Length: 280
Image (cartoon, rainbow, N blue to C red; front, side, top):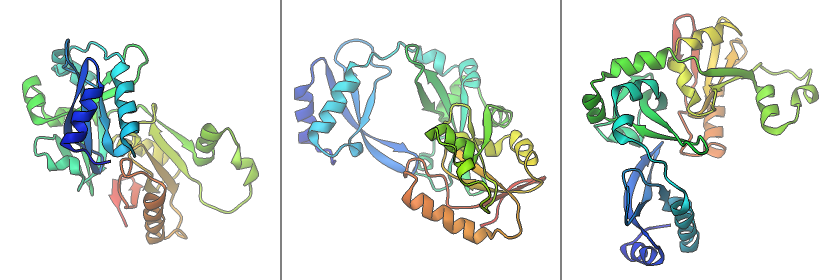
């Protein structure tokens, strides 16, 4: 739903001890209308945010704001979070497309990678429930912490916190149903899903040294399909597989099954001893 000055004033009249402030937040592939919930008293260094785009009505938006306002915000030490030691020990690389709206901000730290880009986030854990939050790293933060982008990249390259399972194993983990037995004997390529251990931003495995090991464990050469920002699929090379047909499949799935905020690219890639390259 669209935010107006009158709507924000109406929301603030309904809130007790808090008020909301409108802003625009660049998420993956999309810019969203954001409402930051700020306490009238006390610490306001880290505040919850809700997105008006996720709501269909005023009532739904107000309910979401009130629910978020009730959640106790942990007492983070902001100076610690943006310190050199914390950044380097809580770093996460994230793959996005090269034309992502996030990169419209010239202050965002990134590195080009094929037709994608690597951005970096600092991870924060909620002490009560271990939920993850993050801060997108910008040039001013790195300058203050005395960190070069090359340091971030080397840490990201050495990350081994990823796992690989067959597609059937992944589906069984999600559904509890073993489709491999049901579909045993049907002709089709082997598929392996690679994601991070916590299933967040797993496509960043593409820049790691580990991707070569994973590929070699199933085939000398593999097709690489970006399912989303959270996972990729490896398919052992087979001369019967047409890369352009794979690309059409990726485009169709992205258009119908993957949310805009989780989409990576419509491209298909190839993995061999020389690394990852774009083929379609």
